Length: 201
Image (cartoon, rainbow, N blue to C red; front, top):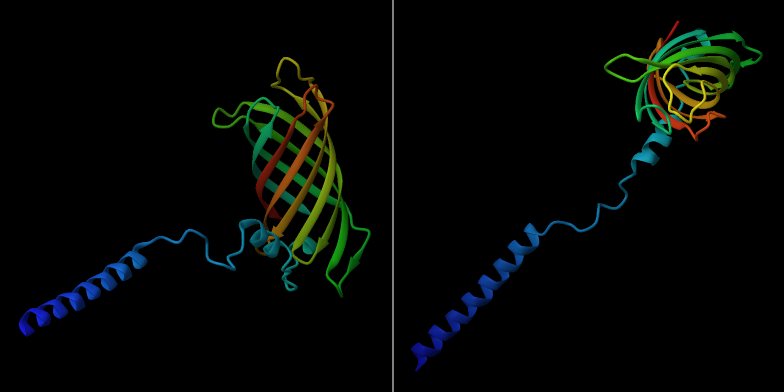
């Protein structure tokens, strides 16, 4: 009788131990259902990067001429993805404050867009704009007049375009950025976003 009770007690202890081990293993293998708390989103990281100024960077203040290339995602145009090459030059800088790193500029720009690998030129345009610079960040807006070489049936050849760009200096002569644009009155609602890399001289 004592032997039977002892065997039963040992079996009960063993069963409890196995259950605990199984429970621990299950918990270790279960994937988390929510992301870790405090992890910043891509949008907040991008905004933080653009608003953290490098006070030693003078890329935009020391240079006036820019040459850039970009990839565009366009809605309502001849192609959903286009490439762009452009140039700009600051013709006048009305303000410059060395103390707080701010300055402004009036500039001229021109660019051409093509439909990708084939290299077919879709349009070219040019215009003027205004830029505001804070150390290594440049905010700019411009109005361009353009001409479509490639167009849809309900799209006009001539168009106007308003664009807005944010640039961040990467070094003494390099910058990257994002932009958005809207064309009018092209016969269709043509709008797009772009990511670009530019060289400053």
